[in-house]
Image (cartoon, rainbow over the protein chains, first blue to last red):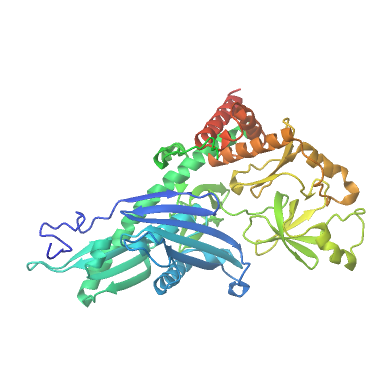
Length: 259
Length: 301
């Protein structure tokens, strides 16, 4: 196939989605018993595990504690088998270090850290299968894990990516939401946006890949924002289902004590 | 090499909690959701104000006491309250105090002045005692204690000034989520099956032979720092403890509340299985369901 295009002449993408269609999201909370909170999230074929420990006392590196708020430590790592070519090291390279910093900043603005002075919250993320939008999937999984751990958040943090398919036959270029791996490698700009949908604020925005004309930024960013809002609806449904399940079991078993 | 009883199951066959529609429980709130308020409300835990609105910051149900509105999360770290019974592990010996890990967000402190030292209640604490601290409790020791005070930053201060509390010797520690422990008057239970449990409010459950708790009450002059590791626990007692541990895990897996009745019922319902079988996921669910059923019958009576 000579030119694999981002958008076919029928308006479909390489995996058959419409430009404004998200990949299927499947998630599960409370997958581990050891951490305080954990979650597993699939966004299409991108699969991520998140585990949250804390808030707990800082044992090592006491210099990093803040006397008025919690210290947040995120660790992003990709399993060596997550990509088509085996990775040499799962974490610690330049790219993951940058991801760690971005994650730290995102969650410092979303978690109500002032409630936990002198404590530390650890968020560990592991990409099991990388099929594009890894960072976004990580942010979404970490949000679920934090909610599972009962850590106060201002709002859900939802992240989504978008890109721009070049113009075809005179039509204007089309923005596309939730980029997968093939679309990432085909080139074009990649915009990743993390938002607090209910508060209507953006906590992280990153543009990578080829350059984007200034006039195109607004539609592409808007696409990512609506994508994030859609993701929130999916996550919210999952959280409510999980909480209802656990509460039900607890309420039924708790009645016996009063009898 | 002979291998017996290998249990292999498919991930797709795993058992999950039964799905519950949201209508069957109270109204749920999720982070960022607006909470309907009355005039002059007060902001409680799990909420925050954004301008005029009150918003939830955790996922859970609303609890309202007069004008105080709070949202209670499903699970969280242990939030201590004065008078709680806790089980904890010594992590550090410092000057005049021990640091205890109680699953709270900061380590708790046990002051030298809030323990009963050997030789009577009214003994003066000298610098000799400070040097001897590691002899009483050292890193890794388990203790039961009561929450005496909650400091400004949320750290807990404990005391063991009762013969009920003190160092724990032989037994098993089970960790569950703190919210699964039901608050009762009594958290020390001697069960009819010959074991005793301490249901720590912080989610640490201690199971020991029944003689383990009585023994401490007797050792008045030693101040509860005796650890009898010589005494052999008979096999029958150990089996009871192991079964009890598996039952508690089964209940916790199904998110059921832990208190004396539920534990005793689970223990009795588990008798038709062997102890090792109790670790299989489907058996765990079965035991939890049977216990649930018996608790229901109790309510009906």
